[in-house]
Length: 214
Length: 274
Image (cartoon, rainbow over the protein chains, first blue to last red):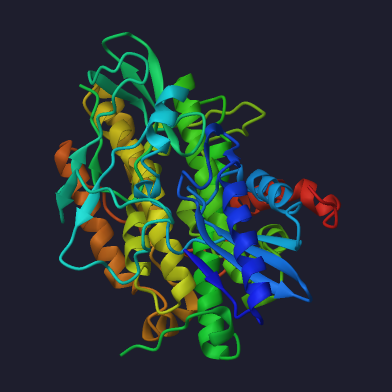
């Protein structure tokens, strides 16, 4: 979602639009510090970009949604976003805020990020959308550019088993080894087909059932 | 219709509401600070290396939750999160006695003789309580608190799952494991009622819809824990009646020592940038 503060005349409006496009493109290139194969935009972490006119130049305010509240990489992301956006001509100031509303859920991950995660060796989280009679008022619209995941919807109250495909051999004969992995947002699975351990992004905010070890 | 407070500005000039909210937020922050700290003391001592990964992950997430609660306190108190966490006097802390109890005899760096059964039962009890408290707080009249609770609940799902797994597996293993779980449960349940006590501002917290009542949380937590004990056929221990809960600012010497240790480096140079 992108929102503008009222901007005076037509030329500054055009200028702001140009800056917005450049900011969006820049954010498409800021990789997650711990999963550089995907960008913050692709992960659905960019909530809002505001272009605010400030004395013939522009201030850019960016609201990001942390995947995990205590993610230690947040400061790195803030610096990286500022470093990338600051050189855009016309931008005098960049302000990055982390907000917890709307809450980040794995459904915000863009479909384009899923094969990239897999190629990087991380199984993407199950893609589920709760089918409810009406959208909950506090739920955010899907992130900019991300088509709502159409398939694989589940009924309210139902849940689906988390059974990721092995990113190495493609087998679905996998088992949860440890819900906790090298970062907050990843778990460790084991592939019983190719006998490799692998990482998987944790589903968050979607109704899943975790397998119990047999 | 209950009044809703959309932002710090909406509540900061209402002394009764503000002081009740501050009280509640300190309970949330201090509980998570202690749970994270006690968890971090297990690092390198857990039963196996996978558990070190898991337990320290839980510690990290939980410390993140504590930090978030302290950050919500910043505009209400005019102090920064680090000062709030480390520089308050003993009687200003609000964590429940259960979470400040040490992991066992010794210190993590000197003759630790920690009890894994106690870690498992306390983990199960606290995270069960935390899930119920977060779910209730999702409808808090203080909107920033409600939003944070919803976000944390998603993450905390994995913490509770983790302790349920240990609880189930140990209770199905040896007689010694069952005996030690039973003993640990006795100690944990002695302190269990300290969790849901709401302290001196309980009435205002509930009346203004800032948080759920102690009775609601007690009832739901006990129901959930009873089901866990029934599932593994262990007998439900009696609840203790501790002399103080921590919510009124009274703490054990071990709890205070932990705060002093956590803040030791910070107090050397509070102005330093980390």
